[in-house]
Image (cartoon, rainbow, N blue to C red; front, top):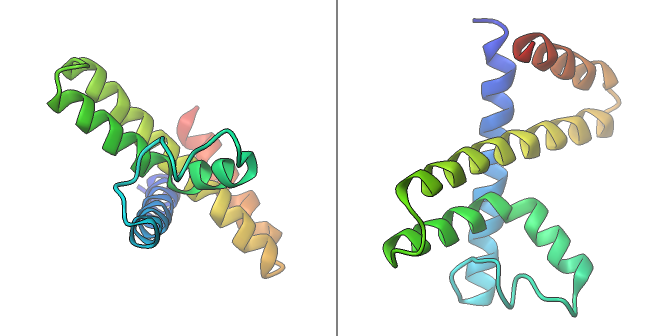
Length: 122
């Protein structure tokens, strides 16, 4: 159980950050979050990368649910997108925890998280 806690914590951090970022982006733009303008555009590469890195799981979930409602993807593909969303949120949480631990001068916390994840996944 102790090995599962860092994974669940990282997932919760990533999911929370993704939801907060996505909600703020929707409020500011006044449009539903998706992999489309104004959030992702070829004319603003850095802004698009930042938006996708932070709110990407939310974008993918919205696009996948819309595609399923319109019959463009199967249920199996929707489940695949759901697994990708969960993995992306976990990765985002790991990155944010690492950045936060480096910011407060505690590199041991990031190393502990990475070691715990490595033991859990192996």
